[in-house]
Image (cartoon, rainbow, N blue to C red):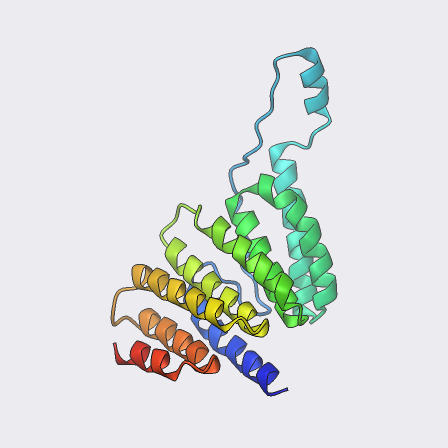
Length: 215
């Protein structure tokens, strides 16, 4: 019970850092994802290939499908129905790879969050790990901030699995990403380090927390 309370409190702290990342949608208020360039390439070398491709959804149809499933998941999250949100997100994940990099990393991250809330820390860790890899492929200014946030959430899931050493390693990677993302001394940088320090303390690493706050 005590460990679950710590994880709950830690989730709140991480939410504070998440608010400084432009793309982050919050706990129940979500930003409408921007349309992405489709990544589906259709071969048209033969009539048979053309007939096959006619049966495939168009790139924009794929993105629209993902968008509707993702939006339904956000509605469910807003109503506090994590199980329903998980169902919609798993549907969205099927089309996310073809809907674009933004769709993929957002869907994986939300699945990680939902699984964490449901107490399924193993699946939460799996989805967050995949979200990290997807975020690394982004081509935008806040990529490192996104990676740092996902690493901190991955650490949170690992803590739920009592994998302390692995969680501490994830926090180290999160710090590196945050150092690249935010100017030293900026409010965003301070918020990020405070959040990581709280996670270190929750893992019993008070020395690590002190080092973060002294810099």
